[in-house]
Length: 105
Image (cartoon, rainbow, N blue to C red; front, side, top):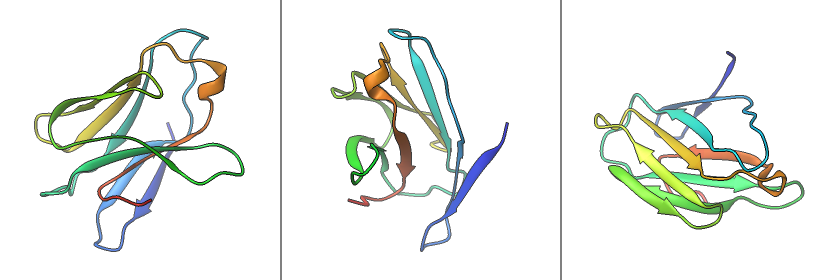
């Protein structure tokens, strides 16, 4: 699969798949690799067309809930990757999703 790399100002690489698909009302897992993470919190955002990014969830370790969209942020034990799980993805959840290692909004 192709990935998108983003270089942040403090030289941390973030890699996310370009696309993800699921059926209506099915679980969807969006993944993010951040192999250079040190002490940063992990943030997830989503952006709808013609709008700015909206904060979804943040976490430092383990699992943090997300209410809109309904789901959870899961952070690997070594903190080198994370996934945002949408419990019952809907067409209305179609957007661009970003992970970041600092608050960007």
